[in-house]
Image 1: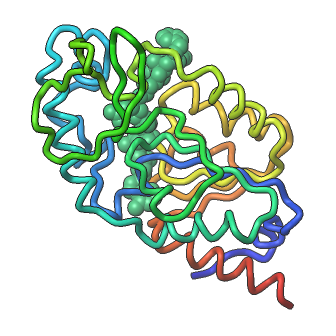
Image 2 (image 1 turned 180 degrees about the horizontal axis):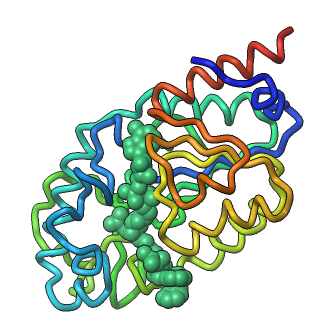
Image 3 (image 1 turned 90 degrees about the vertical axis):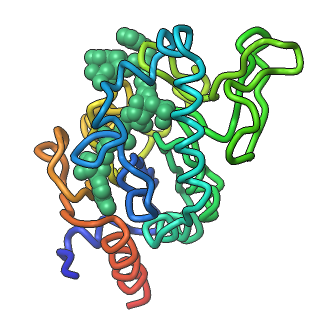
Length: 247
Ligand code: BJW
């Protein structure tokens, strides 16, 4: 796989590297993406399922959808793309990962400096008390699941029209402001506010590189566009970067 020398030179160990991922990084593990031909929402409009209104109207349907997705994800493993990003955390002293994914695969691959900006589908939250818990059972024994207090539990994720966790958002904006190298992997870059992160990083002077099998709304603004599968490109890219450091 060919990478230009000028691109590889940007990945110096002194750089403040932020990696931003979306559903495409987990596609090669077998987790369906949201949009596109085989997207999770091919048969439903996103607004039908991932909204507080949908949950209030039909919590059983929404939990069936999450239970189905949890079943798929429980059988998956991190792929070479996840592994390369976990290794980046080891080799870059200034590294952070912001993921939109709720599947937990980055953690399983070994990343620790991570913000799960849209939540985590293995966590539940009591709609009455706001208490967050973990539940890895697949399938869930009761749908919809209930809290000990008797109220409904909901997935601890961010739906359309909901605010992101303010602390996570503030930390993410800070990381984006401070980074000088942003690697954007496998996101359609249409869901706000995360879609604005690459735009903001570029505006602040960061070098922005995109890895995607397709072009996206940010392709025209990035400094480097690597077209192909994340699970193939990222290990090859990291290999070249490390090779350049040892020469
Ligand atoms: C590969 C690959 C391989 C495949 N290798 N690549 C400003 C303007 C307009 C609207 C808004 C706005 N601000 C807020 C909004 C409203 C809304 C929004 O953005 N709407 C747009 C869709 C128009 N945003 C919100 O409501 C957010 N809240 C908010 O901003 O609060 C304040 C506010 C509210 C209302 C109005 C104004 C302000 C919350 C957004 C929450 C998103 N939640 C979800 C669900 C999470 C839970 C769950 O998983 O069930 O998050 S939606 C879904 O999309 C999920 C994802 O994280 C997110 C992004 O998707 P992603 O990761 O990009 O996946 P895909 O499938 O879209 O793309 C995959 C990509 O991978 C593709 O590009 C492929 O080509 C590529 N690929 N295989 C490399 N092997």
